[in-house]
Image (cartoon, rainbow, N blue to C red):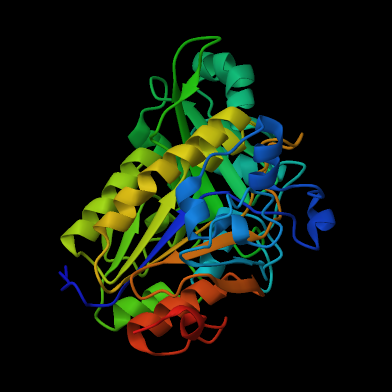
Length: 398
């Protein structure tokens, strides 16, 4: 573990999971016309109080639909389009780290093939129920009693490339649920399936009052080639993964891990690493926006979570060292105001801050999320990544 001096270069990327900033031009292909996670929350709720993010430039981003409060941005700002034809967590983070996919992961709008399910059931020694596209909270409410009675795990998917397995912690203990997920991951590694993630979805409670716990665990497919994370680690530097980063990258390119389970603990961990001078690249995912509010179409909960992050931003900025550059972004959208409970095909916002970041720099609309990873690598090593364009020269002043 490396400790840094005040002036040593360090990059921090905080992903506000699902905080999109408006539909991409191809949104119709994904059924997401009209999606605008930030703008629609502001419109439906009537207000969205994010003065600290606004001060950095969030509202100045093209088509933000947010009130600029007549502030001149203190940071750099822009939005990024996704090259990969997808709108899921894995593709978003991989592209951010310099690995866009030519072929997106497959989705299963009619559930998974019966022959796969039979093989899966034989290997785990249990039958299953579900096998449909569903909201996690809804299917647990609907099939939870049958699961508790039979011991059969609930399997389901969504508009994303996921195979989700829900089980009551009192019926299938966590170690067994995780083992079941590992079996699924091994089977789904077959190139014929191309499934991005297997997700353990444990829950607790009684009939009519089932509630998911924070013991979720993601099993991603391993990145097909090196990412910027691998490149940084191979150069003898430390990558710190906060939240589900290690899962998304299948434990590759991450040297220090704090597997936080919610926004509050994720922010605390990030601040702790910043204050301690730990690592060369801190990569944080804050999951609550997506998991607790976006997928549940909870506009008020989503808005409150955004405002709580904004209120915590001064702590983050205050913990930064002289050589730190902070990028705050997202990985896709999940507009809670639409009828859909799934992710949405949106641009992602980007605000950049740090003592050496120029004020009021409009980075415009970038062609790929990979510009983030390219900039991180450029800042830390002076090297160029093979995908994406570094914007370091636009924002950095010595």
